[in-house]
Every structure is written in structure tokens, then in C-alpha cells.
Amino acid sequence: MEQESSFSMFSRVAEQLPNTKSFIRTYFLVISVIILVGCIDPRLKARYMNYGPRTTTSNSISKEKQDDLCSKQRQSQTQNESVSLFPKWLDRLITYPVPHAWFLHFYILAILSSLFWGIQITTQGQVLRSLAGNNGKSKTTNEKDIELTMSANQIVLVWILMTIQGTRRLLECLTPSKPSSSKMGTSLYLVGMLFYGFEGVAIWIEGAPEILSPHDNASLLGIDISAPSARTMLCIVVFAIASILQNTAHRHLFSLPKYTLPPHPLFRKLICPHYTAECVIYASLAVLAAPGDEWINMTMATVFIFVLVNLGASAESARTWSCEKFGKEKVKNKWRMIPFVF
Image (cartoon, one colour):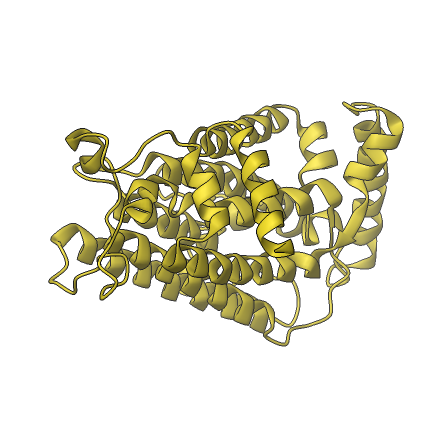
């Protein structure tokens, strides 16, 4: 009775929330715009967006160069504090440093989210029905709604691939590596946690009418095992290749004894090939999840846009940091993240 009451209360609260699909799309687009605006002023970017080794001075460089970089960092920090956008107490909270190792929490949340929504999808759980009901559509409304709904096959397949992605990233983070004192701001940590929280909803929300429609009890959401389409096969292959390349890049970075220019072929022409792979992974999921005759899933597309913008900003920071540490000559012929474009 108490559990039922809790779900009923959640349902009443959910009914007062904005359209779930629109809310998620708006959130990812707004955060993407904020990141782009932050990139306009290098001081804002340095104050609120830099993280990891780019916020610290490595011990692998000479004492003279290290002192010079420390001096520049102190001067830069003073300048950055003058461009604070928030009241002093809020600014300190937003920029309060937490261990970069807390990235691990993102992937723990990603797996827990996948498990939770997997159960909700297969059981038509109360939480899912409350959020899906906010979209204001039912599969039985008209034929057009049916065409614009993800199929059950798509929902399950995208869920499986996203679960694989979160599990792989968690295992990579658990790989033993050298101790690091790198930090990231609290705001970045919270944005990351919200990303993986909302991502769990984004993968199925455009298939809500399919999930909520009645199905034969003998089947799981009406799934029939049939030959996948050419688009589905292509997306799965692209996802797999990008995942393998990203894992290869990550393992190589973990194997480096200190922060140096990675000698692996993947890094020959790209500063951040692991970011490139991440963007390709989310692009493949956005196409794979496209409902009906659409060529892309617009909700997953906003997730992709956020990933592209966020990692693009990080790639720019990585290039700046590499130029300062190794010299411009070492990276002048390298693309940041997207070959021939950026």
C-alpha cells in the first residue's frame, strides 16, 4: 500500500511536469549553448570548464618550465576570478574542486539507469508510464503517430547498446592506472551526472507509444526476431568500430607512464581520437533510434549535440594545454577532434 501510494504521488507530480520529450531536448540544447557561450571568453572557459590534467601542472616537465607554468596559472586564476558570473558563494560552490576520479560515478549511474529503465520498459512500470504519459500521444491515436514511434526492436536494441557503452566505460575507469591529483569543478560533475540520468530516458522516450500499447503476453513488447534492416546493421557496425577504437585509445592513454604526446597511430593526426569515437557512438545511436521513416531520432540528436559541443570544448582545451606543454610545433599538424573540420 505504501509503495502504491508513493507511485501515485509520483504520478501526480509527473503530470505537472513539462512534456518529457521537450524537456529533455531543451535541457541538452540549453546546456550546449551555455558551453558554447563559455568558450567565447577563454577566462570563463578556464574558470568553469577545464578539468583533469589541464587544470594542474605536470611533474614531467623541467623545473624552470614548471615554475613558469605555475606563475601563469596563478596569474590566470586571478584574471578568471574577475569574470565570475555568479555571487561569490555560488561561484565558489560551482568551482569547488572534486577528484577527477569521480568520473567513475558517471558510469555507475549509467549502468544503474540502464537497469532501472530496462525493468520499467519490460514491465510498463509506473515511473515510465508517468513520464511517457506527458508526451500526450498514444499509439492508437492515428496512423501517423504509429509511423513516428520507435519500434520495440529499436527500443531494446538501443537500450542494449547503451548498456554496453556504460559497462565498458566503467570497466575502463576501473583499470589500474597511475595516481592522479587532477580535479574538476562541482558544476561539471553535476552536469555529467544529469547527462547520464537524462540519457537513460532519452533512449526510449520517442518509443513511449509503443511501450504503452497493449502486447501479447507471449512476447516481450511485441518483439519479433527478424533480419535487421541495412540501416540497423550499419549503425551497429559503426557503433562497434567506434567503441573498439575508443577503448584502444583509452587503454593506450592509461599505459603512458606520464603525460606525454601519445605515440599510438590513432593520435598521429588527432589530439583527441577518443572524443571522436564518442561522438560517432552517439551519432550511430541517434540514427539507429530514428522512429518510423525518420532518418534520425531528434531526442537522441540533442544528446549527440551536447556530446559534440562538450567534447569539442574539451578538445580545444587539450590542444591549448598540449601547445603550452609540448610546443606548437608538436601539435600544429593535428586536428583537435574532427578530421579536416576541427
